[in-house]
Amino acid sequence: MASNLVVARGGVEFVPPISLAFWRWTVVFLILLPFTYVTLKNNFHIIKKEYKKLFFLGSMTSSPVFIILISYFFFQEKINLTKVIGLIACLIGVFVIIIKGDIDLLINLRFTIGDLWMLAAAVGWALYSIYLFYWKSKLKIFDRFAMISFFGALSLLPFYVGEELFYKETIFVTEFYLWVIFAAISPGIIAFTLYTIAQKKLGASLTGFTLYVFTVYGAIYGYFLFDEKFENYHIIGTILVFFGVYLAKKNNVKKV
Image (cartoon, rainbow, N blue to C red):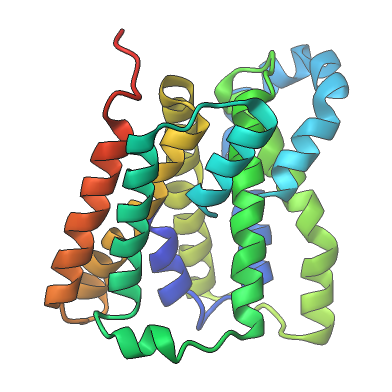
């Protein structure tokens, strides 16, 4: 799922943001459809009953902080001390990497409209994660994901049309197709399927902790793909993040 960072970094020159999201989920649906068509057709009565939930999940496609808070206040999921300490360690580790070990950057931090979009995305992903876990479905994983991707693309359609008309037109060149297909397969089908499976085994809030590791992977991707340097603050942040995930996992995973 951290390969989303690669898409955001490398694909931005070739694909407008809403266009990328719309075509990504459209391609995900088209890839899954041949494998799920028969079961979706046979279970159409289930889709009719669950379509509102599926549309909500699709439109939400973040933070582990929001996932934990929503789990606690709305679904009474327990939060123990080790999980809180792990959360704090992860947050510190992520901030160390983001501010590049320079406390002045944090002190002089200025917020922009982009930060508000990031906050909205964080809440959206948290809602997706929580309701994906607590809304039980009679559809199998890939059938459910196919419908979520369909409704995700559908919810993006009016925004995609608006972007095409008033902001930036999509140019359908080779780079466009490559980035969209990569986004659909790696941070799309593979990542979302594994995330769903992890949620079933670990629960919503504990699985949410894995999102903090994205910052670490982002630094690694930057080093190998974008010629960025791997500094000491990356090492410190990485240690704190993995220590935090370890604490969150400790005594919170049921033995099978």
